[in-house]
Each structure stands twice: as C-alpha cells, then as structure tokens.
Length: 351
Ligand code: SF4
Image 1 (cartoon, protein in one colour):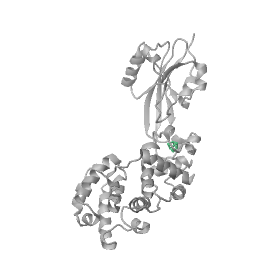
Image 2 (cartoon, rainbow, N blue to C red):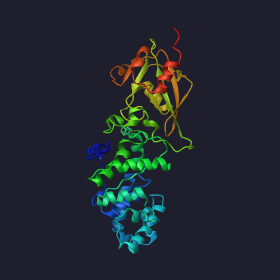
Image 3 (cartoon, helix red, strand yellow):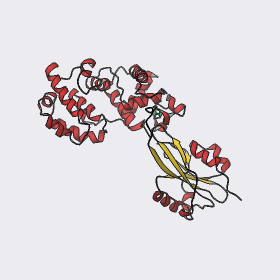
Image 4 (cartoon, rainbow, N blue to C red):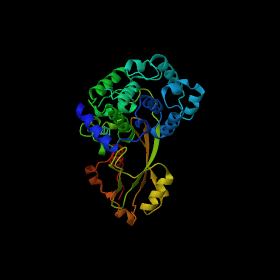
C-alpha cells in the first residue's frame, strides 16, 4: 500500500491538484516558507492576494528581516493570527544572524526557528529542495486516519506518533514537492472533513474507513468537546398506496448517493420544494418526533414532516433522482441509517 498510496496520489494530483499557486512559481525556500505560515489556519484562496502583496513588498528573506515589524504587520493585516507574522519576522532576523540570510536546509535548524514546527519544516524541505521529509498537518492527519482506519484523537501523542510513522513510510522516492502539495490538496478538496468524495476517490480500494463505514467517525474528535448542532427538515410524502417519495442524495457529501427523504435547511426552502413537486398544502404537514444523529463533528437534529395521501406533480415523473418507493422495496435501497429507522419504525397509515 505504501508505494501505491504515493503513486495514486501523484496521479490524482497531476489531473486534479493545484499547479498554479503563486508560491509554486518559483518554489523558492522563502516563498514556500511564507506560504506555509500564511496557510496555517487560512484557506488558499484567502492567502493568495496576501502572499502576492507580501512578496511584492518584501521579495526575499533579508528584506523581511530588515523591515520594521509594523510594516510586516500591516502586510499581514486582515489575515489574523498575528503571532504568525511576529514569528516570521523574528525567524527572518535569526536566519540573517545564524544562516547567512537563508533558511537552513535542515530539519532541526528549521524547527529551532520561531513559528516552525515539524510539519512546516518538512513542508519547506520537501517543497523547496525536494528533500524526503514527511508532513502531518490537519489535512494529512485526517486522510491517514481514514485510509488506515486509525481511531483515537490525532492530538494524542501515541496516535500522532503512529501517524508520523505512516506518513514517513509512505514517502515516495521522487517528486517530493508535488507529493507534499498533493497531500494538502487531497485533504482540502477531496477527503474533506465534512464532505469526503469517496465515490470518486483514488484510495477507495484500500480505504479502511470507507470499507468499514467509519468515514464520518474518523478522525476521532478531541474528547470532551461539545459538538455543534445542526438542524434539518426531512419531507416524508406518502401517496394513497403508502408509497414514500425518496430522493437520491448528491454524489458527494454526507450520505452521498444514498436514497433519502428530501432534506432542507429551513421551512422556506422546504415549502418551495414542496410546492414545486407535490400537490396539497405544506401547512398540513404532520410533524413527527425529531431524531438526533451524531456525526464526528456535529450533531444533526432531524425534524420529519409527513404528508399522507400526497400526489406528485407531473415533473416528478421525469426526475430520475426522485421516485415513489413501496414499503417492501425499502430494504433493497441504500438509505441512511436514521432515515431507514424513521421509515421502518413509524406506524403505517391507517386504512
Ligand atoms: S475513500 Fe473517502 S474517506 Fe477514504 S480516503 Fe477517499 S475520500 Fe477519504
């Protein structure tokens, strides 16, 4: 699997990764370092204009070291987490004092600088010089926890150690800069925290979380942290024969491509959908007992609304992602567990 992971990841990166980021052209150590620091806590699209302004004003490490801190903070203004800018400035001064105005090409010397941890140092070495160094940022922790089925909060030293060992064992022997960028892109755009696109994922054959149905559970969240709650409405329309109108969910995201009750965030959206697809009166809905379903990163409160004797409008007949399903057909369809439970455990309509 270890070689395979890198081969597949690089093949994915060639087609779907980011190749036009400003710090990739050129991938000079100073530019890579600056981008890595800016990207901590901040998304790529937000960082790009800040990065471009910063390197236009302070194009190299000696220029950064010589600039007044106020100028550096002004260039950082709006990016937040200003300790990053202060550390960047302090580290630049140290590089002038200790390393002739360059970043050192050495893991220990890099991590001795303010604001540079082991993963950032690895990212700089791999991207700027192509050195065989692993990274383990939040994205990589998530991907490795899922692909290798590793339970336990990744912030625990024992789990982190295990993940570092895997990250190092999987390193390819070439294209380290691309591989590093590929890992970041893969976690940021495909194996995302809430909406992993498992159906199009090049790792799906070997992904233990996918095999075991544990994608939403991994990585294990930090213990003791109360989960945020989200609410949603599910619309349960039944025709006079007791068939249920089900909708196929989008191909990516939670419960990707499964059949479920149509779902909406609020009554306005739900009413709009109802009026477009069904006859009858939205306000005649029968609200059922809400269900709470726990995901890794949030709790979902599902409020079912039910209409009996509903009639579909003609447009429903042409929609391949909407269908009336008889109760005895439910068993053969892929349906999210809490929705199946709702459909199967709620009493049949009388008559
Ligand atoms: S199959 Fe899904 S969970 Fe596994 S690596 Fe791919 S996107 Fe992530």
